[in-house]
Amino acid sequence: MIIDENHEVIIVGGGPAGLAAGLYCQRAALKTVLFEKGLPGGQIAISKDVENYPGVEGITGFDLAEKMLHHAQSFGLNVSQQEVMALKTGPDKHSVRLANGDLLHADVLILAAGGSARKLGIPGEGEYLGSGVSYCATCDGFFFRDKTTVVVGGGDTAVEEALFLAKIARKVFLVYRGTELRASRILQGRLLTEPKIQLIRNTAVTEIRGDDKAVTAVSFHNTETGDRGDISADGVFIFIGYSPNNQLIPSGVLMNEQGFVLTDEKCETNVPGIFAVGDLRQKFANQIVVAAADGSIAALGAAHYLTLKRAKLKAAG
Picture 1: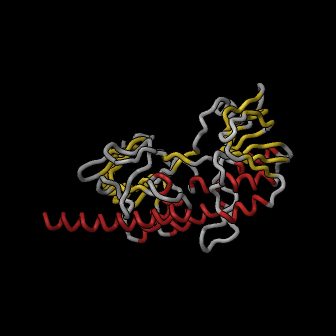
Picture 2: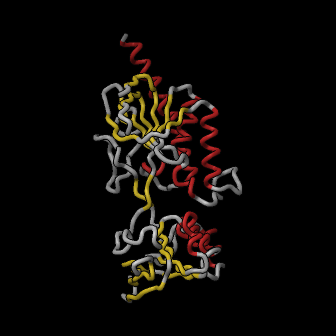
Picture 3: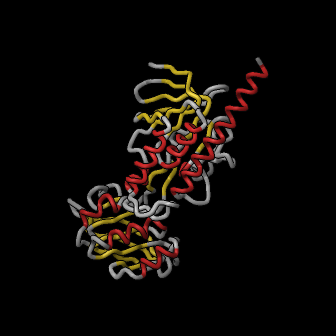
C-alpha cells in the first residue's frame, strides 16, 4: 500500500468537467492528479458528432475528448488510468483509495464521475441488452442497417440519435411520453424533414420482446387514449437521460432526491474542500460546455480554498 500525503488536488473522473478542472488546476500550479478508470472524455468519447461546442466546428466526440486530454496534459496534468474505490472526508485532508490498494490524500477533491444512461426498467430491457437493446446509436447503429428501430426519448440526445439511425436503418420510430418534444428547435426542424422517422407521441414503451436470439418488437401504451399495441422492431435505442454516478460520494455530502450533488456557485459541496462538477451535480442543463465550465469554476474555487487554508495555517503557526 502506498500512502501519499502530498497531493493538493485529486480529480475523480476524466470527462469534460474533470479535464477542464485538471487544466485549470495545472495553470494555478496546484499539484494535481486525475483518475479515470475508462476512456478519457466520458460520454462524449462515444458521440459521433459534436456541433454545439463554441468555436469548434465539425468534430467527433472522440476527437474533442482527445483535444481536451492533450490540452490538459500539455500543462503537465498527471492522468492515471486507475479505478477509485472509495472516498473519505477528513478534518484536514480527504482520502482516496484505489483499486490497487493505494491510499492517497489531498486537500481538495473534485468529483467528476459523470452519469450513466437511465434505464426504462421494463421487462426485456436487461435480457436483450446487446441483442437489440442499446444506449448508444453511434456505437451500435451499424448492426441495424436496413432494419427497423425504435428510439425512446424526446430530448436532444434521443433526436440526435434518431437522425443518425435514419442514415442507416430502414425505419425509425421515435417514441416519447409527452405531447411536445424537449429537443432544441434546430433538431426538431431536422427531424421533421427526415422521411424515415415516424413520431409516436404520448406513448410509453412497456415491454421489449424477442425470440431466443434478438429483439423482435416493443409493446407500448398510449397515455392519452389508453390504447395498447406492439411495434415490430429489430432494435431499441433508449435515451431518457442519465443518472448521476454517485456511488462514491462520501458520507455527509448533500444530494437531492434524484441523487445529484448539491453545490454552491463555486461548485463546492457542503463539505469544505470537496467539489462536484459536470453531470454529477444538480443544475439546469447538462451540456459539454456547461460541464467544462463547472470544471474551470471548481479549479478556481479549489485554488481559492487552498490560498485561504495556507493563510490560516500561517497565521496559526
